[in-house]
Image 1 (cartoon, helix red, strand yellow):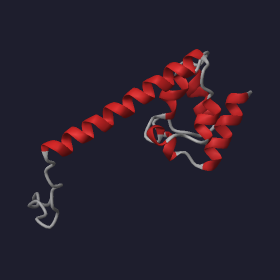
Image 2 (cartoon, helix red, strand yellow; image 1 turned 90 degrees about the vertical axis):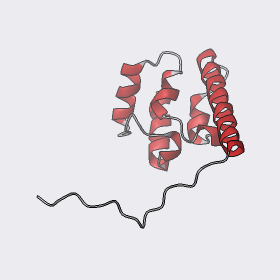
Image 3 (cartoon, one colour; image 1 turned 180 degrees about the horizontal axis):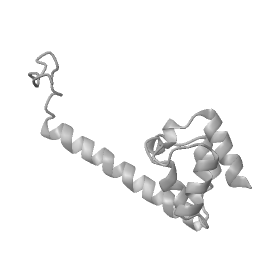
Image 4 (cartoon, one colour; image 1 turned 135 degrees about the vertical axis):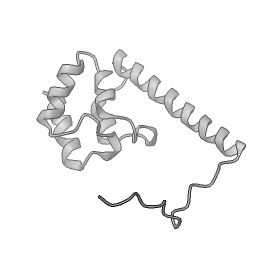
Length: 113
């Protein structure tokens, strides 16, 4: 067994953020969470359609998990969401922005049934 090697000195750590940069990042993250929460409420109330959201997602939804959004749809719980994702060959941890065109189309088709 080889001895543990010393840390690679060629890798630089990310630069520290200033207080203003951290505040701006926190504000942006809070805005995104607020918009996502409102969208989930709209999905639950029937004021928004998941099909359009999946086919053409707004920028703030790109990093949201597909399973979290589908659970907000009425009549879809964890079991049904996992079944649909398995049928479409989509990982439960996949983000909306990470879906391929095939996955989007297959998922929307499956949800419309």
